[in-house]
Amino acid sequence: MSAAQRAQTVYPALRYTDARAAIAWLERAFGAEPHVVYDTADGTVGHAELMIAGNLVMLGNSRDDDYPVRSPKEVNGVTGSIYVALADAAAVDALHERAKAAGARITRPPSDTDYGSHDFSALDLDGHPWDFGTYRPEAPG
Image (tube, rainbow, N blue to C red; front, side, top):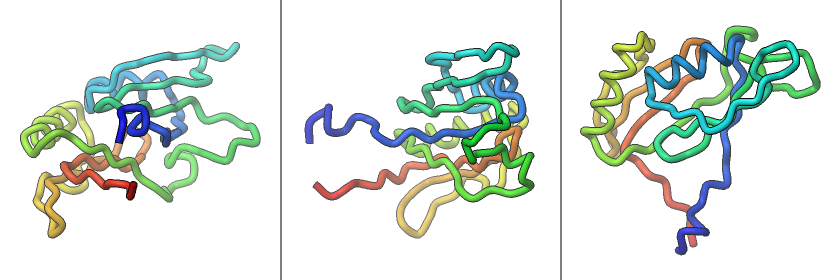
């Protein structure tokens, strides 16, 4: 498989009640790096892209429009989560410590799974579930 075929083609998109605070928190907790941030006329974040472990995640402020995605804070529940594959168990453990120090709510501490991954799970400041581990699904091809 060529590098072009391995390029990211799925981009998670999240909404936050305060996207600017979320960006700062994701930087502290998960080592996210802002790629682009576009503000709206009212000064909120209309669209942002963050690099996390070499992948882009899109996010913005929740708003009243026809886009159906809302912050878990707004709907008091979630229907999905983000999984990020890291290089090795040491990277997972180091990120767990960083996230914990930033105040992430750890929902599952680092542990080994029955399918060979080393994972941990945390909630971000709006309640989006994030999972980090060594498991790397491979598409057929």
